[in-house]
Length: 89
Image 1 (tube, helix red, strand yellow):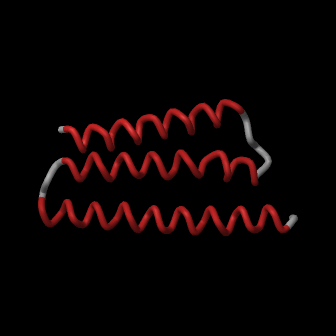
Image 2: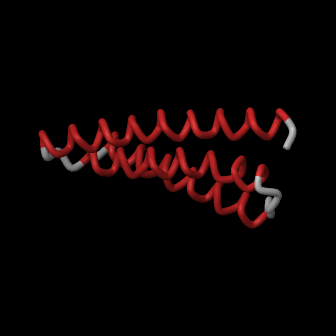
């Protein structure tokens, strides 16, 4: 494996850990306050974070297919839509 792949995997892991911590923090806030918009916000960030990391992980695994890129973009659109819904609701 080249240094590029290793660096990509490390940065993706850091990105997913930071994003996961952010989502857990939002969910814990929901459990305390019971405000429904926080659920939509955490779902939106989950879809956005996983959708952004999906093409990177499949590229490193050498199984990158354009259908996975489309799925990742759809996940990001759904995530942004959920975040937008939680804000304007």
